[in-house]
Image 1: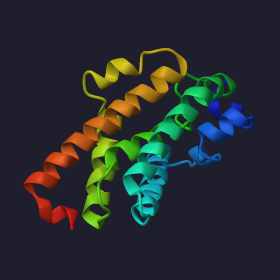
Image 2: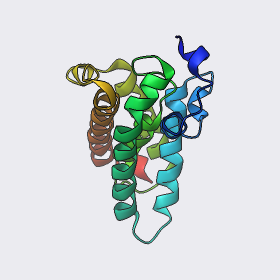
Image 3: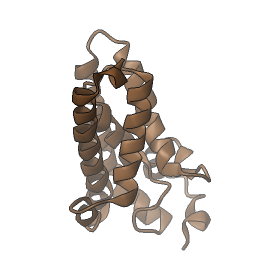
Length: 163
């Protein structure tokens, strides 16, 4: 069954994997998932222990994805459905892990995250071939790590963007 037809299945797995059904947003649902992560990162930057909280949230969202994405995939009747966006949210935490909040940092990190997730250069593209939740989660995890590495280089060579 196509995802649109199955999207009425409101199971716990679909709810969690689509970040409260926001993954059904009709335009760029993956970007919606990344923006969820970006907003939560911004919130963590305002705490006394941002790195600790960001690390915990990255792990929690990754584990939630592993637990629920495979079931959501079956419930929605598609391999790696676009509406499943918890993987993008978890990856956003990796993109911004330990980075102080700044408008340019947020915009560049968002762009880098989407760039690596959409284009999936080698070896990221090989990870999505893994079965079930592992394939859904690990390609975005790798995209988040690649984004973080590039962001770190940009912040090192152009520190003004981190202000």
